[in-house]
Length: 191
Image (cartoon, rainbow, N blue to C red):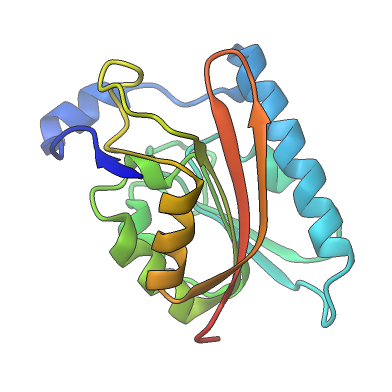
């Protein structure tokens, strides 16, 4: 299942929606999801040979996931919102993914915010060996989160990954009170 929840917002609407910097510690559910994601990424990174040397984070967030990753790799932050602590400020994820490369791309709570997640994933597959994704599972109610353009189940994300040049390696879910989250790691078929 894959569903378009709403049409794309214009620039003025986006500015009003994303008028504050994200802070993951504001909500218990976000703290839990971030910690869960960090544990899984650290486990994945630990066993990669050759080792992961460069990680780019184009997540909706405040950099907590990338900051939680262990290891001597190079790290670069990006975000959907213009936050002053990021190294790629004022640039949408769709634009940023065409300008950066690395071993691992983190997209936590990103794809559901993109007008065209398929093009984003296709571009990412040209520049990254691996991608890590979290996104809500089975979101179909347009009133659940007015920031989200898309909702999908596990099969919907699996199909989207495969159709955009990715081979899924890890698929897990984290059921919480408001959402059940999907966690994916996939390998690029192009890099």
